[in-house]
Image (cartoon, rainbow, N blue to C red):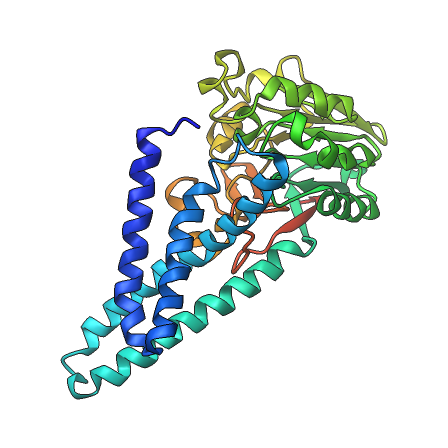
Length: 378
């Protein structure tokens, strides 16, 4: 198993941060010798499994999934421990001049509070992540929308991340919920997989049962490129999904034309120069007066989409931050985090994702199946 220098550096940093958490919390818990040993054992296991969960490719699929489950659960807890321990230290430093005589009990109870909060957030986050995504309904108002397209329904799923902890049953539940909505179009906006076709084809197979009046359309996300986009594109097409790679289709609905376009991921050119994301190229020979909807994995495609003349862009990628406090930091990497936004005449809808990546944890950023309706602007 070849290990890179960057991985070793990251592992050392993770270990150091676990040591910081232990030194700041364990003594103040006052749990005795056995309790202290147990706490350090948990921290040690976390420091080992969090980085190990990404080095499982040389193991059997079953063993890799087991390690990933443990590692990702601990990763989510570690994230919350780190944030709350830092916050606790800041609050203790601020309060020390005012409550110096009560600092020892304050340190004890605040340490217990951190542990309790992490356990609660981890369990609630696990429940939220593992349950089927809820349906979120949103109307998108379009100026001069033809009467025939008023109420046109697009159901969007995104960022399922089928992999070590998301399997066939999880995907089947999503497919059943989507089909029950009777959409005109199903939009699949990337990051559906986290692994190879060989390992995950059987778990992705339920997507073949997606049903909509005009079909299910898919665009690539960055995670499709890691194991090999070409193989996944062939597999998605074999399942009956219509993959749009900087191209469009014209859907005639009650006599009116709607242009549905899709672009490759914003970062795709780093993997394949021929796959540079190009909203303008995706509209080649499209009828200029038609309503135009773009599927683009990352919200930061919006500038190019607006310039190309699209009316709507549907994206994912952000997960809405997935769990607190990272939902407040997504905006530093993407222009929009979740929900409906406006850029000039372009509407951008960003899904929080239908699954999750890494830690099976959703807290403050629930997963969603998005039911979107085009409506006439008032």
